[in-house]
Image 1 (cartoon, rainbow, N blue to C red):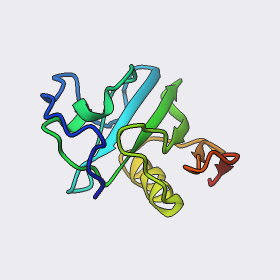
Image 2: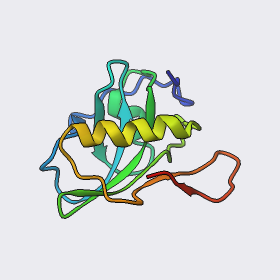
Image 3: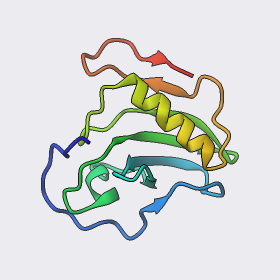
Image 4: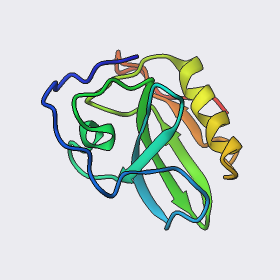
Length: 122
């Protein structure tokens, strides 16, 4: 579990919802809770701590893009949680697939915290 770098106990955004097929196209921030559920919120500046709210730690966090009902991009980009575990991102991709989404080939991209080039994982 990764604690948020900003420990302010922001309230959970009421738009935060478990990921599910049928989400409108667009960019989303996500955070995975302790039970493994991935919650999403339309992406905007500093929304990650509001996805779970209350200063809650996350198993993993990043952003993703839905286009035509498919996941076309999923990353570990989150200034709040800064997840730096490629295997964890692969698990996120698999969990998203288990929810019923199609995750496009090449959509899972890992950004190392050292600023080196991103890597396509799956």
